[in-house]
Image (cartoon, rainbow, N blue to C red; front, side, top):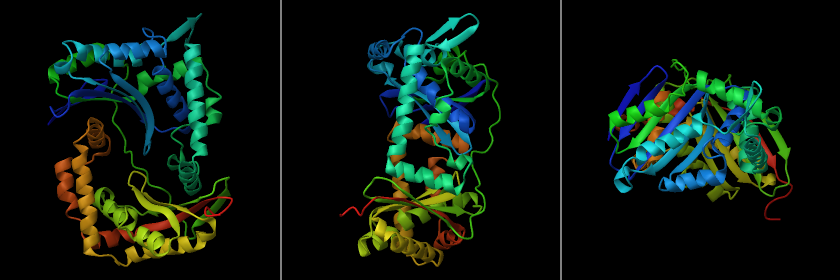
Length: 428
């Protein structure tokens, strides 16, 4: 596998050459600083552009076009990465070796047309997205926002963060907001789309058995619609406010059986080593699987939960614990979780636990090389987060010692307790 980064005035091109896959995947990222009321706009851009193009003005015609490109697969997504909002457009298609000559150029042209040749209408001096496709994209996003609120697990995690850090990027909903959606029309959306092409930081990633020079030329020929000048990127990492001395406890009720308990812990300033490696080990030992402290104590020994896990979020310097419980078991479950977090601080875990955590981490690293999307995530992490490459990660994870985990444990403080309380106990 060979990696090469090529820079232009407008964007960076990242080429990962490998013969491991029969496909070629191309991803283009549009990145800008996170602004709350722009999240909904960016989701709408994704939905609208993926609905149709000027050449293929309906979903049916888009489908026929992808079939003619040997079932080319395309998707768009909008996500939050710390202090940045990233829109990405991806295509995956068979390498020319398995189709016919010229298919790489045609496939990349399809992606370029998807982004730069939208289905638009002009009247007088105003340009708008096609009304019919705009409405389809609008209704799709509206349904997604509503469904996110109807999912108790995701809803409880979001509500915990909104109570932990209200009005901060940490609490923003990646799907967007109904109140912002209702303010968007097809003209406003097109104007925002134009700013995206002029102002966003853009990276293009290509992975597959490709020729560097040819890919560079095809990208240059098709992506001339990028009008921006390349800008330096700031840190994606967010440092939350200092944790509360007395944790905030919030209870809400919903018509569900199983109650959802989410605990939010803030982490004092971590070293680079702690953030990238020690936190992984800590989180795995505490609540990373069936061998974890939380699973054994809360679920196996006391039968107090249906599931329980901990997840470290290094970009935001927080750790969350998620559990499904009966509402009558709230106090006892909370007490046992606090006890296990305290035990981590006191070093009440074995060297064997660290070994298991490292093995799990190493196995996950090996799995990264099994899919193009995982490798693209790896290299985008190197570009955006200054992450280490795989070889360095193998070396660094093995340097984590028990004393490192205990030292990090002292920096982890409970800030917010959120309970989405069901109307009854599930067994009832």
